[in-house]
Figure (spheres, rainbow, N blue to C red):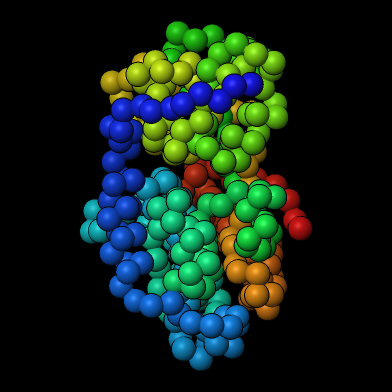
Length: 277
């Protein structure tokens, strides 16, 4: 499967990304890292009374900026719940997708609750607790394209965000002759479909629904889902104690029904069965 240069128009496919980028630039530079050296522990977070949590911005409904300019979404509600269980105040730091892992590594945040797929490549540099959410990887394409499975897209051009879980999954599952075309992010993949630069795009179902809602004049639709993508929080490699606390808290939020309530609130669907590791 070939990988071709991808340079679509930069017209934003959904407006929340721009606001999220502004918020990220403002809040990330607003204060130094919570801890300059050494692992951040639950004891230290409790002592300082603030849990600094990075969330994704511009990826509805997981991370958006509301009408008052405040971060909102599934990830924000989960982040606030973590701070509540810790018994401290949450400091929410909105981050664009590309800024998530660098912000964690630079110690600007204590933990990421930012819709990250726990891929083997990412696990080389950061550590993932058990998943706390999931979305369905799906295909968006023009209405005129008849497709009900990846088999029907053999010989077609499918846009994916470079290095994303959908990149890995489509590359593994696509039929021979499928042309996987890699772009920088979800928005440019969607724009490539709108401009007919590609035949289809592989994106999370929640992202597709948001893009279509904000681009009602386009002749595109969600065709089908082809895989479930779990999402995990993330900590640095030296945060073993915090990693274990997160695993315990995610477990508690699952069995208590709190994560299911948030899934129904933001995703309009019950929490799917999530893997444990």
